[in-house]
Structures are given as C-alpha cells and as structure tokens.
Length: 209
Ligand code: 3NM
Image (tube, rainbow, N blue to C red; front, side):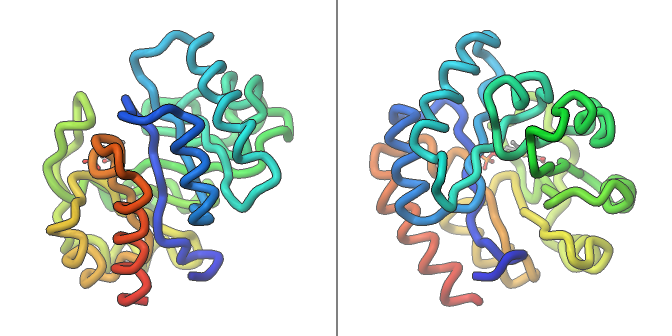
C-alpha cells in the first residue's frame, strides 16, 4: 500500500454494527478513509454519529469523511469531505470549511466528470457505479470495468476509488482492470463479522499489489 494505493475505502450506511465498533475495526486495519453516508438521518443524528466515530478515529491513521455536506464536515471536525455531483463544488466547500477540513474527495460517474474533477484537484476521485447496485437510490448508468483504465490515465496522480456493486465475487475483475482502491458498501455493512470480511478483502488486495 502506498499514499495513492490505499486499497480499501469504507463507507458506513445503515450498518448492522454500532458506529464505534465499525470505527474500531477500521482503525485496527489502518483503513485510510472511513465515510459516514447516512441519507435518512437528521442533521443532529449525523453529527452525533460523527462524534462517536471521531472519538475512535482521532489521532489514528484512519480519516473520518463526511458525505455531501460541507457544513456538517466543518461542524463535526471531519478530516475529509466527500462531494457528489449535486453538492457544492470543491472551491465553495473549501470556503464553508474555512481550512478546518483538510481533504476532499469527488464522486464521478463518467469520463467527462472525471476530467472536470481532475481540474478541481481533489485528494481522491470516486468512480462508478462499476456494477449494478441497490445501495444508491438513483444510481448513474453502470460503467463496467472497461472504463477504469481510461479513468486512471486521466486522473494521473490523483487516487481513484472504484465503487458500486463490487463484492467478493467480482472484486478480482475490478483489480484486473487496474483499480488499486475499492469501496464495497453492502458487503461490509450487512455483516456482523466486519473484521473477517475486511481481513479477507485486504489479503485479496495485497495479493494483487
Ligand atoms: N456511490 P455497494 S455507487 C455510494 O456510483 C455509492 O458513485 C456510487 O454500494 C457511485 O457497494 C454507491 O453496496 C453505492 O454497491 C455502492
């Protein structure tokens, strides 16, 4: 694993386990990014969840990422903010965060968006959905694994995280297509044995690096 090839990116959405337990496992395995993505919670509930997670991740190798909301990233003291295509642009997010949030990630779903994201110089780019996914309410069209090579070439030094419908069965095809970083939401959220699934996935990533 290197700065750009951090391997696993973890997203918390409707978890089976308590937030703190997930955060402890992420810290144990030195997962670089742990994102809170709770679309159905109130702002207060999101800030409460963020505080629980940050109480575990603060001072560790794991960065807490707030999803979508620059205001909540600022208020929670998040290390990183992840922005989707419908959120404020990165430069506006930086104004809202007033230097308090240090890293920024951008979601992209096609080559044009990747080119646009690169111009904004984020700390990483998410690209997907690689496969069909029920996790997102209105997913963009499936990209397939074929576009990954082009995305990596366009992104250059900016790390790319492949996301969407990735699971134990198809992760190998995503890695074979060149991806170095992957995010699997359901696979890690619908289990009570997160530790084992992370450990298994990290060994797959290690074998491929
Ligand atoms: N973003 P799962 S797809 C949060 O295409 C998210 O940018 C996507 O969930 C994108 O791993 C997605 O359970 C959901 O399929 C991924």
